[in-house]
Image 1 (spheres, rainbow, N blue to C red):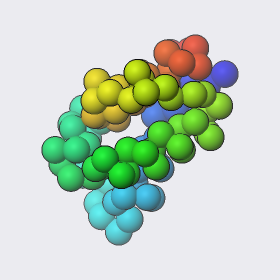
Image 2: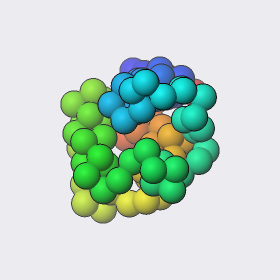
Image 3: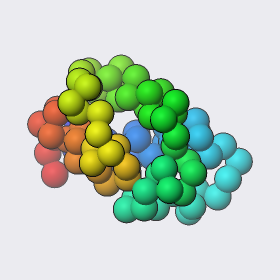
Length: 88
């Protein structure tokens, strides 16, 4: 079982390496909209979902794929933690 901190680190690393390569990592704020900050768009969200499914062994259903679950790093961490039963 992963902790929320481990989940957060994996998600942040993926976003930084995949979508922000060469940019200042401090530009990735956990509570700021990834879409509004132009880090993730609709195509990239699909890549992110595939990463989450493969990395954490979970299934993201159509009902799960909402802005509430994927708009910020905090939201993604909460979603994944809920799916995998992560410890705090």
